[in-house]
Image (spheres, rainbow, N blue to C red):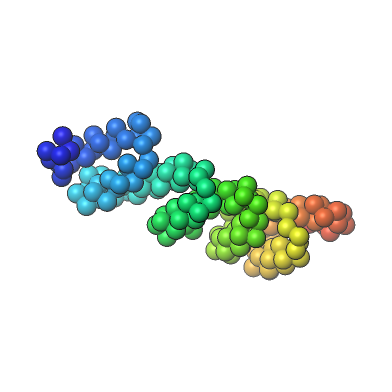
Length: 173
């Protein structure tokens, strides 16, 4: 049907539904531009679908080798590279590959823009050799948000990892 009428809205809609039911994320990625071009969905529905498709596709692709992960990360639209859900998946992958410095840099960049609780938990659980870098960064965030309990908790957690009990207690109280 798609070959007979590649621009027919109803056929494109059915194709989208089939791919969704099959969880065929790579195919959905390929038809997204066509769905947008022919306005198969209202804009708000399209945006939700696009986000879901890229996220799910990223989850399936992230399990591949190191180089393909980076390439796939770079192919994701920039607007999604700054979203916490995408960053969380990528950072966890970097941590599994023991690329802690890369994970820390990406988390730092993201947390400067938006303090996400999930990303902050991951940041606090990184076991870096240069703990002072993490502490300094979190303290700089605290200067801008002095009443943010999530930041105090993250800082306390880092101090606990390094067995600095006095500092941990101060931040966790």
